Each structure stands twice: as C-alpha cells, then as structure tokens.
Image (cartoon, rainbow, N blue to C red):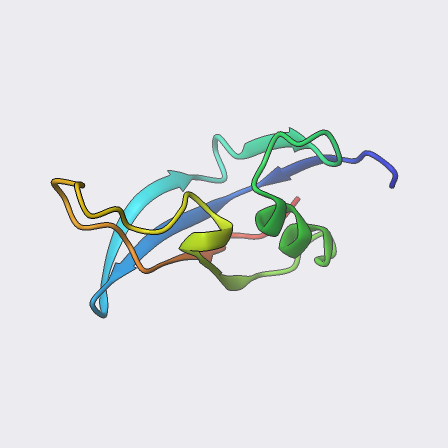
Length: 92
C-alpha cells in the first residue's frame, strides 16, 4: 500500500442510547493530519478516509469494537455504543 499524506477536518460524536455527544473536532483551520499505512490512526477510520476523493464530504459510523473497545462494567461513565464521524467540511 502506498503511504499518503492526508489532512481531514471532521467532528467525532459518541452515540449512547440514541444521544449524540460531540467528543472531538478537527476544524478546517486546524485539520487532523496523518500518513496512511503506518498504523497512526484507527484501521477503520483510515479505510473510510482512503475511500474518499479530495473535496468529498463524508459521514460514517465506527462501532466501538473497531474503535476504542466495548464498554466495560467498571467504567464510571457510560461508554458510547458507536462513534459517528461527520465532515462538516471537506477532505483536503
């Protein structure tokens, strides 16, 4: 696989019991930057982003099992069921 330098602006929401909560944001003024193929990002995130073309908008969901793991019994705060990423802006 060819390594690519990627910049992407997005909003990350955690969805728990149908409630959406903003957890992270990489605005267009300070986009997330990474090199693909070196294990820097979540595998599923990278797969979804690599399927896009420059300028595409996106909206995809990553199940917890493919992100940060399932909710554990001893967590004090409830864990999310899924993580939803929305562009709000465009991939550059």
